[in-house]
Length: 169
View 1: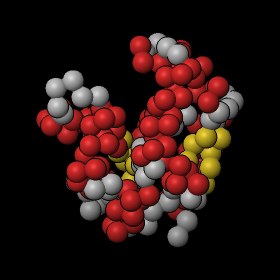
View 2: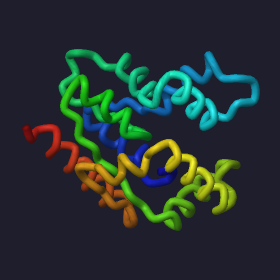
View 3: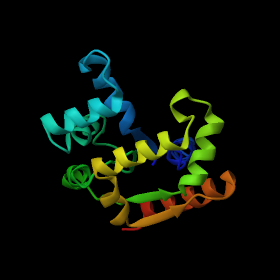
């Protein structure tokens, strides 16, 4: 969910030497080529999944994989069909990051982006994410990492979890 800390953790994991692919970046590449005039990224994402299948963004993400990669962290799965796409090519472990709406809103306000000014805007984004199917992914996650406290502790716990999962068979 927006403001949960997934990008913060992804960056720290990348700095530890893991390959990280951010699905929203993959989607933005396609958005730059195919968006309709004035179309929001979220609307584009809904349209692509409606027209090309709910696993479409995961299919695009697969194009970024290298067969030599043993462990890849993928940030931003939005629905169960995307999980199924990844499971077709290898072992898939889902780690969800949870932060309360209040905490996430406070973080988003600190970012200072225009779309994050009102709590109602965050609630609207949350419901759009839920409509996309992210609730199913969260509910079926293999691990839940809570991010309500200090960033250093969150990053430490996240890296420990990714390292554990990547070496366990």
